[in-house]
Image (cartoon, rainbow, N blue to C red; front, side):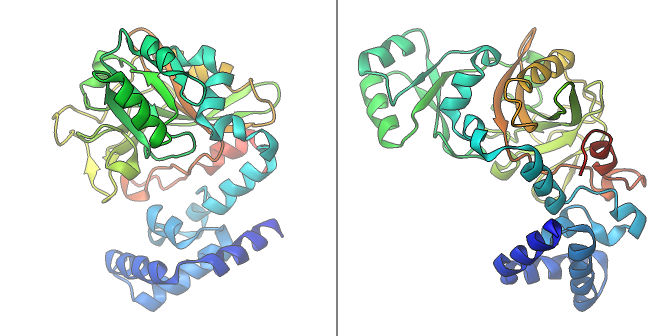
Length: 330
């Protein structure tokens, strides 16, 4: 019933213009008639909870019925969040200041809240820093984040308050090895965890890589790829245009088979952090790799859906859902 209600609500809210645009694109890629693709999308929405964006992103047109059952869709993901993440505690992750305050010991960097800090306090914070990172409190996808020079402290203070970038942090100096992939951004891991009340389980791990830009977010021009349980890249990276990327287009560094340094420390870090708020059991952690350690950048109470596209998995055609079902009652 919950699944049906979610689908019906989605039908009401759907952007039909974009749906038809995506369906046209998919039908061309799949070499199928538009109407055939459209009806298959509708079928998959009711049968598997796969919206038209799921259908496109996870290439349902390449899958048979048994393979389709193994893919985590947005409907199924939303049901996990609703069941295991208590809304009353989500503010600890959605508000960046509250997050930093709650998870301070996992950040391993200093920060200041401009909602409370005076100009003199801000000057003291910036005195040994050439640059700082400024963030809006409730934005996502890398939006509202800027790297700022501290040459003119008073001007910067006023500018950030005017822009509502109230959270200011010192720079994260990432590991040299991972920096080589794209030195202009901090290339972070997204590690998905589920805390069952006793044990923290690792559901999925991806590596996000910038593409000459300041941030590594997919929606801001970056790319991502998948890691095995040892932190090794297991398939080419993908960008927003579905390009397969084994060699970084700018730095020419090899992405496929890249081994993330200090991966074990990143896993230990998120396992410990996942126990801090027992009412939020399902979290997507963004983690930066330091020279000899790891630090948490932020946590996501609405973890996205990441799984290898069928055209990237060398014919295996299995989604992430079976792994989730090992640890989560859905």
